[in-house]
Image 1: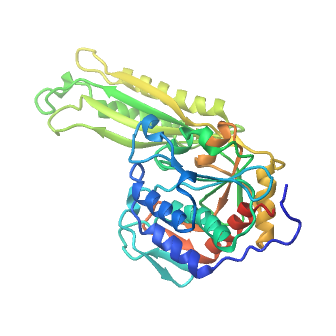
Image 2: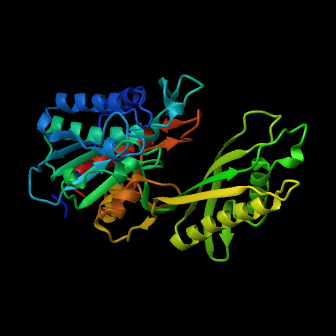
Image 3: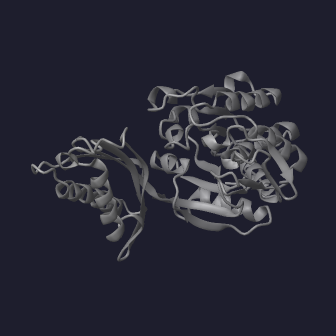
Length: 399
């Protein structure tokens, strides 16, 4: 429930929030190496008077397969009045392309002055929305409900921060809000699920010039399998009747010399769909395609290669009801900031996937990032400032 029926004051200092986000985007922090940006945020929190006892890190590094420098950054604060606890969150890691970013303002956008790097607005812009909300609350002494501020690590490499977050440290929030890509009026209420696929092709080595017929090429097996998947409609955009999803082979590695019939090749792929059963069908199509291909490539003595196939879920799909309290509150905040909320379903993974799966329904809002994961990445200034207004509205609980 709102803490007040009075019209909310959602003004933010545009210069202050732009200085904040520019400073945050300049700090390196690829996935697993987030210590420096976590210290940046912690310093600002302490300067604002947040007690050290309210600031903690959890033990994600002990559970993540990537280990990492530091766990999730969590701040838990009591409210100034009785109300359900709210959680505001945004991940602090960036993709490697953003290391070395030199943010610079150009008209209505911020971009990287280095043409060889991304900007890092994904998701330093979201992290800045969350940080600005508490800085404004402290500066202006605004009333607020109990708050948990949550800056996860390792989102870009598999949502591991959210997946392994210590729920006890989050304080049992009732309404959860995440900031990530998109326009500030985007209210993401659902996202797809993703399954990882790892395939190892074991062929037979032979001299590629002297006796190629004695070998079994792992590359040839892979080529046949991939052709099969493309021609049968199981690679790329996958549509089968009323069911839809996507798949992609993103990593291929193998071979050390051109004069050796390739004996081993490894591939990493993914299958996505909002429908878990259809996602499983995509995975099975991959398994069968590679198994068929292995039987078709033979040495002169009739030997074939072998396939070692593994698949495992990265995150499950979710979809929130439009009546979910966090969705209603998010929509009200977007309207109060002068925009019309646009509910959407996302085909990418979000930290909200894992929080929702772990019993904390989480809605995701945008904060103005564009062309993320590329050197063209930019941050639309007006959209980011609007996101900061929305973040302050939700943090103060007036909507």
